[in-house]
Length: 264
Ligand SMILES: C[S@@+](CC[C@H](N)C(=O)[O-])C[C@H]1O[C@@H](n2cnc3c(N)ncnc32)[C@H](O)[C@@H]1O
Image (cartoon, rainbow, N blue to C red):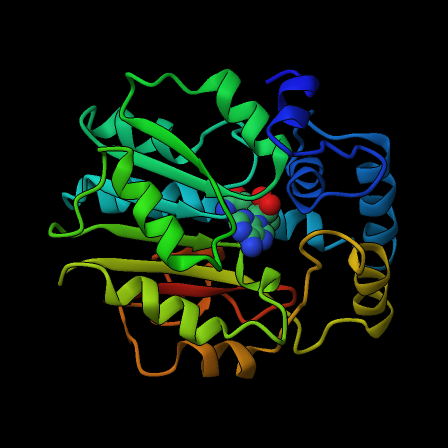
């Protein structure tokens, strides 16, 4: 989508401030990022070099979990905080295994919208919804309006590397349960995020400093805080843990891509 179209849609593509979607793209070796994103990412990497392998491991977890759940028979995926459509996106993985798999992506970064408009083909069983995932009713309705989602059938809800973007003041638990409450029995909720039980304090401070003014400042939670948000969900084996080697239990190492597959 050209810049002027984004502007007329009220969406400014500000390339002078780091954007979480583009910083993450830089971490995983993508090319859709700008100098401000790379500068912010490099500052974080200086204190916390493990974040790059962690981001790559997260991306591989996303591919593995989508492949596994497609093989198990799931045919619809609602991907909240989908990020830039780089290589091996959810629809590539799912539709390679099951060409009839349907995927709806949701993100609130204008850059993601621009890429989605350019790359996604309306006939492909894949759509993009530009929305803030905290506007649960709007997202659920917009996903339904794509014609690809049927809430009466089991669905896979993905929130992969998205938990850090819930602010302290957001009711993360409430938002999640409003989504899962709208889904048919048998649906699954895939959730992961970086946790920081042992994060170097300089790195945590750097992340706050770099992303404090971003539209979605990242907040690295402890494992205990994530457990509290996800408390009460039944978890598929191997349970909540490091998703680096999912579905095998992962090593208890830092930094952890902590999460798992939860039953709805
Ligand atoms: C770290 S990326 C993860 C991308 C992808 N899920 C993955 O795991 O590869 C986080 C994404 O969440 C998006 N995001 C953050 N807050 C959001 C919000 N409130 N509504 C919609 N998207 C959001 C960001 O724009 C970014 O693209």
